[in-house]
Amino acid sequence: FSLQLLFPMSCAMLQASTPSRQARPATHNYARFISTRARARGFVRTSATASVGNSTPQQQVPASDPLNDLLACPVCFQPVQRGVGKNKAWTCTPCALSYPDKGTFAEMVLESNASVDGGAEQGRGTYAEQRILGTTTFERPQVSFAYERGWRQSFSWAGFPGADREYAMASEFLETTPSGPFLDLSCGSGLFTRRFASSGKWSPVVAADFSEAMLSETAERMRAESTSGVKLVRADARRLPFRSACFAAIHAGAAIHCWPQPELCVAEVARTLKPGGMFVGSTFLTPLSRLGQFLGDDSAVAPIEQLAGDQLWGGRGEYKFWTERELRDVCARAGLKDFRCTRDQQYIMFCAVKGDPTV
Image (cartoon, rainbow, N blue to C red; front, top):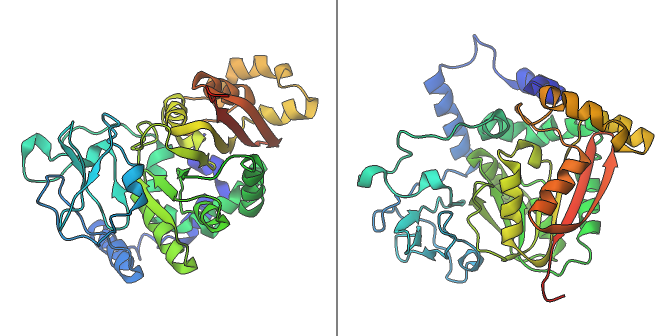
């Protein structure tokens, strides 16, 4: 499935809002245009080198920063320590690695740590992981800008009921979950982050995404709505930079279909949940799930799913369309139990709980 088939309205809006070929500036000028727009909106981020002592001055963050009790090295999962003075990098002593603070968010992905080959220059080096379109699409500033301006609303074709109703459904699942630290994973533009932060139940609320553009959009919208109590972290869902058993609940709205290696990502969700903590997510079901729901039995369409699923809407494409059975399986493999879900057409919201050995 191409991006245009998955999000037809979104792509049409994006094309309509994009300058024509004649009017669009040259590539280097367009990048400068995006950067200038970012400065105007007040979310330009200062950069920091990974080597301790070489960081540029950063925004002062109080010692009581709640991330001190949550962040961990994505290599060894040991706690990281915040630098003092001018150096605000997060440092892992066992690995001798540092992760820069960008002012707006903590940069906690593998590609952002130590300088390449021991050199002074901070950089990614020559190696780069191959990324699927489900990841790279949302790294574009144009997409982060459009996300709450029509892109996300277009999910209604699949049965997504809209942000307010989806938040209410997630809150119903989470009603009996004790309060505590909360992670909005693959937070996007902060569509649900802001709602969970405003509820007053969760503290702190951490918004994590791989896309810098989405984190910047989240920060801008939080400022516009005066949302407080949220910390932003750039993170890879396959290697979450958080300590084990540190979150009371984790939410991932319209996310798992974009994740590379989703089974590994769900295992990371389970690792970072406290015993008894809940994972709540939503995603797209396969087109045949509509028929299964109509018949009241997904097993009736299972043979067709197995025969054609991988070729038509399975795990080989840009996005993963799921069956309810698959979601149950990946949760169970990670030790998440008591799976429940609500479905409508190709929309599903589901939850599962990390087992508590003391109960």
